[in-house]
Image (cartoon, rainbow, N blue to C red; front, side, top):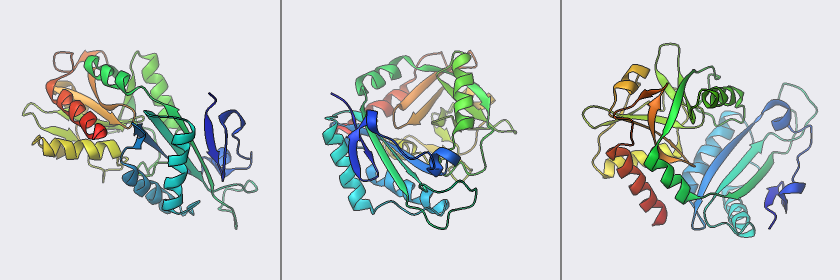
Length: 283
């Protein structure tokens, strides 16, 4: 079965899904996006994702392509047409088509596209039982990392460098040696006292939706959460380290720059969080 995409008012086969070459998303990365996990046909944390999408559009003075109600209907229909039970929704809004000029166009109609693909959540959960390797990379991104912008070239370069170094993810590090986040994830450590530590969102990182959900789950499990910056050295000395994202849940990092975190195996805290997160999605 061919996949179906939504493009500016129409549901079309993905093979026929196009935007104009003058779309400012294509010309300038003048756009924002969201990625939403689908579990048993249900969009996980849909409203927080839409909240963040609207915040990103407002930060870039970008008009919404439609109201939230119609957007919910579009996404629900897209899931249905693709016959997806467990999957991943990608939605993107750009400033739209205009003659190329760096300044905002006097008039343009926002472009809205969305795609939906299957995602093997069992494989995601299985990966958490083995953990992954990561590599530190310098954080060279722009100064508004709180906006979920499609301008991701620094993230791509970091991810590629990590993959070439044998890692699954890049752990981004600022000029002062503090971990900011991953190239497409948020970062956490488990301290010697058993508390979770993650960089505060006020500190120019993306407010991850899965990050927020895991924080709530941890508090429900009475696991202390400290929102505080930590260094690479802190990570290497931690009992556990893990990342969070919509497609990875809480994924343990067992080696960083080829050095073991803890005993080099996924730890019990991350396991509890993974189990609780899947319980939340299944509810």
